[in-house]
Image 1 (spheres, rainbow, N blue to C red):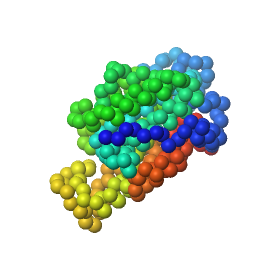
Image 2 (image 1 turned 90 degrees about the horizontal axis):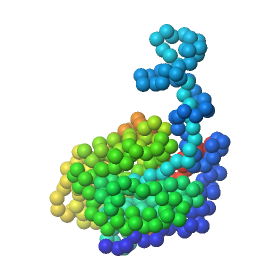
Image 3 (image 1 turned 180 degrees about the vertical axis):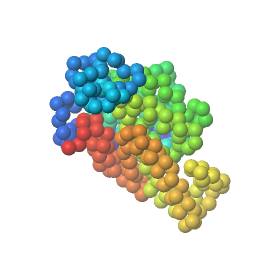
Image 4 (image 1 turned 120 degrees about the vertical axis):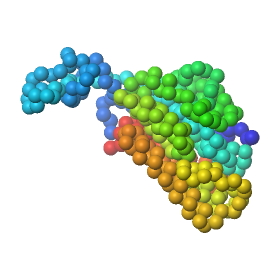
Length: 323
């Protein structure tokens, strides 16, 4: 197996991308990398309807009377600001590793780790903590550790080497990150990098993990590595075998795909992607589709990565919301 290759973005290029991204956002007064959270601060946020469990000391009786409904009380909510933590979670499943042994191809796992490394640079420049984790892969540490500054490079090197050399998780080991997500600060941002090829229980577990990461004031971003254009090109030209996708069963043995095979695969992938997208949009999660070119060859993928990372930064809203 080939080693993880150098990131297409050198530090100078990354810094230039970050500067351009910051200029695209509206300045809200909170500054870059600050996130608001509900709390006991003195800064009033808004009135909202009382729900069971709210502190009765925060009921605004005068506003409730003006509201005009005897069965509904209004509660003052407050917020605070703090530097957020960034957690990046990589899908290490078998479909993410396709092409790892081919020197002229770039696998989805390699792209995911390039994104992790680039985000580490962004975090180091912004003086925020960043942690790396994978879905289902048992690392040498029991909990995710968040690094800052110069420690980020060392933390990423350990994480990437560990994940790159590991085997794809299977069965019950596919998602084991729930405990870590439940301990995240309210001001945290979690970025998931996956290909939307997880099915059945693994898909449900992934969606549950995303919901955990987006509870309260937490923000969840899902970066979908949409590799189907490249995989379809390979399927149309090469002798291949097909694994199960969604409701479509595995096809054993090597074969040359016919046009009906390609149409059936198109429909299966589209249905799979739509199922994920619908679930994410219901939860208010930021979804970014990182589309692969038709051929996942080295030179093409490197150039595409340089272009797509800037778009990803804008979509993920790490610096704020686009104006």
